Length: 385
Image 1 (cartoon, one colour):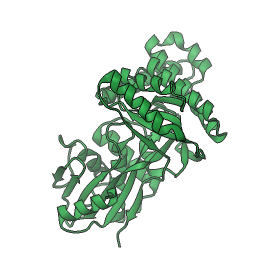
Image 2 (image 1 turned 120 degrees about the vertical axis):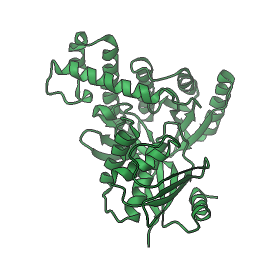
Image 3 (image 1 turned 90 degrees about the horizontal axis):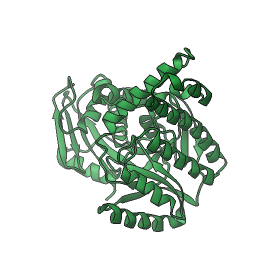
Image 4 (image 1 turned 30 degrees about the vertical axis):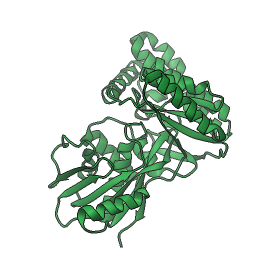
């Protein structure tokens, strides 16, 4: 049964009526540009062909009933909440969006899909985007897509309380099939770079490590980057973001910041340059160069930004030893979740089998893996009459 049919059937059984709207809302991969979004820099994400599907209908009161059919959890709130709910945590991503929209009305919701949770592919942003699109359609709010991105970003920052950048929501909402998005996160300008690579594919390998430190350490990295900007501004007061700093400026300011802050800045400045180089490699279909840049990013995330873990390092290093793999890195905030591998398509099954066996032998637990492709962003597949 397809995810769309599954959420439709669950909705009808749960609420005794058909949904009015069904939304497909994808996760995302980020080719390169990790931790640069909140530093005002460039990123190269793409929506992927795995998604959350949400069925929804409006109510005549202000109550919101939500059902997560994959985990069989429910949450009911009687109206606009004053604060996030304690459990289940996933409800806060929906409630945050509706609250940021001014609570346009009550809703009945069922969602599920084939998007892995906790793997670093932004299932939370996918859920937020789904809720935003569904509410916009049900209540005829008339938001433009970029406005919905701003709403979902604000919901996660101010209601859920995660100080993330805008990349995840943007990629999931604005993605295009067979293309990466070259996005400037400060100016919010973007273009699409085709991924015309029939002989190559992307493999996500899930470490199975829960990203327990991701939220707290993510906040710490943001603070550390801000300290770096403050030190750089003693030399260049007009500097706006860390991604605007040049290697020469960073070298000149090295004595004005602690070694740890310098390493954080060195990673971001280097990642900004790598992202530009990766965009050029993508345009030139130079996948060997692209793979080398991915691995350089992993080294920077591991050594300078310090957001890796032994399991992620193992998956990257073992992956790079296989003849099918052109490049690999950890993806997302770090401390667990997935690695991203650029792999020759014909050899992808053998590559996954090799890495699965090696991971099981090293850590005593299985490794999940998926091949993914860039896909269109969030879409209403069943709309109101």
